[in-house]
Image (tube, rainbow, N blue to C red; front, side, top):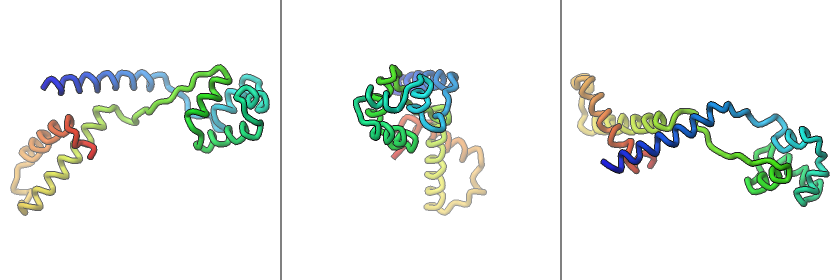
Length: 152
């Protein structure tokens, strides 16, 4: 039970941090990429940035293209950012709150398990009270939410 409380606290902490990020209303990547966007805002030529990064102008052009096409490494992106006196900020922002994603997954698995049991024993679902079925699903959901099996 203590592990469950620790897990609940961890989830709460993660969700608070993610909520803070979402509230910052982070902007989408500029159409031609962040490197070019910041470089041009600074009034810096591609050649000047290439020199600061320590690469050829051709390599710098390829780097900007790689970022635009989402084929750049984080290592390279960090190096370019530092060359323009910028921080590289990297994170995943779930589309839904983490507890909701966990609840959805657990419910999906619980319902799937119930369907398997019903097919094995060939039960007519209309003969089983709906509230009984829902309570069994909810019991399974609560068990799965803290199980290592949730994402297997």
